[in-house]
Length: 404
Ligand code: CTP
Image 1: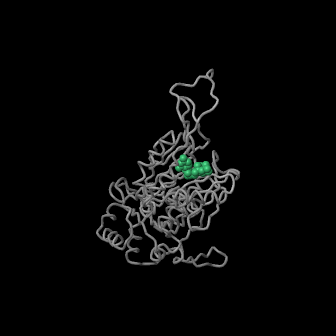
Image 2 (image 1 turned 135 degrees about the horizontal axis):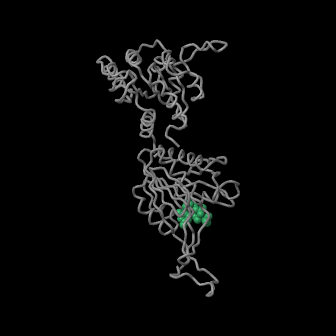
Image 3 (image 1 turned 120 degrees about the vertical axis):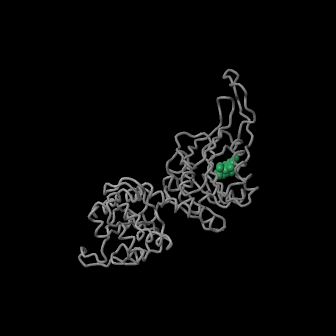
């Protein structure tokens, strides 16, 4: 999930040849999960059609104060637009639009919306090199920066005039990256250190056999990826799993046994802001591991088992500033058992799965959870993809961070 997911972005397009790149900006924003409302000037329409932009944004494009195409003419309320937006991006910002922005010359809907916007405003200038370096234009840009707007600087290269120099609008991918960086740095997860465990543990009987379980690790990987996309520094301590992909900002520590997982968790614990324990840690391990492969002819009537250390309970005892979230897989009296685990292991919250829910738990791509938090009413969720469940869990973690 991108940090732009669910964000409301106002895209103001002014008249510059670079406007031909704006459908790609809209596509990238929509792909990231943002809702995009395009507001364009009349002259922008000579470079890119409203039809193209309304198709890619899936919304009517606005350009005048009054929408007369509607049977009963309606007022395109720039104040409402300004309040709706989480960010406004003016790209391309022509010399004319920069001048109107800096003078508060609200003779079109784009400028009126800009003046009403309470959100951060990004602007990406685009014009010919001599216009760009003209002192009047430079001072407009400086004034806009002084007023708190965020400049996405023009780059150097071949210009539509045939000249070479500074004045090209930044590329759409870089513009999106600038927005993402801004929202990442504002994210409550920015620079938070989150340790997440995933998958099963394997407890060896001999060099080739083990006691394990069917955990696929999908839930833990979804949590790790989602937290990384929200700007967290994630360490994923993973038991043996196959086919799970990770976000580049997830640091994966592979482990096999419960003991190795315990050691990795202890190593990471002091520096962690939160630990989410979604691994299906084996509760028991063979009391001894045979050094050589056990021979069938020798028989094996029983495997003597010893309990593994309960990692969460161990972390709960040493808890200081860390937020501790566990998972509970229950087959009966789910809420009562989960509540008991939360208290017994000194957790802040526990994610409850019931084995009786179809499509939930081990191996599935979906999960159905109840989020149980100390002194709060349980929150029940419907069956969702594990990626969606990860967002729900991290929403609660964000609230816990906010309350700290
Ligand atoms: N857990 C752990 N270390 C273990 C066993 C479990 O850290 N040795 C963690 C799990 O990762 C999970 C939580 O404890 O977050 C609850 O696990 P669960 O298997 O539901 O409960 P148990 O405590 O093992 O109790 P029971 O098996 O009796 O339900």
